[in-house]
Length: 74
Ligand SMILES: [Zn+2]
Image 1 (cartoon, rainbow, N blue to C red):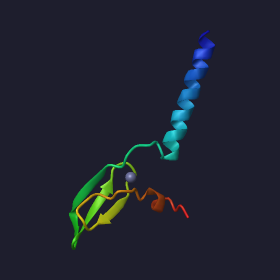
Image 2: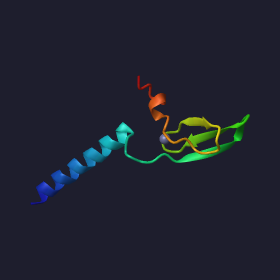
Image 3: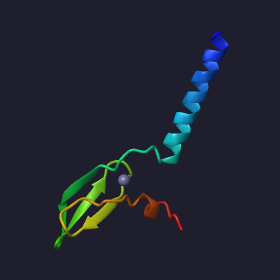
Image 4: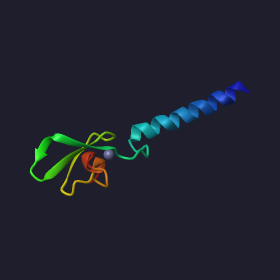
């Protein structure tokens, strides 16, 4: 039954598309230290997944993503 296979493939593609659109694909944040922007004692980090910036003072990458702040999740 090729039609059923096609339907399943379309459905799977649809869900993958929706997940990528929502931006919550479950990917962990990948923080990269931005060494070219020194800010006193703090360090600038950039998330490669969400393209947001964050600052920390302990030299460790941020534990949680700031994407909710960026998208205005109030
Ligand atoms: Zn992120």
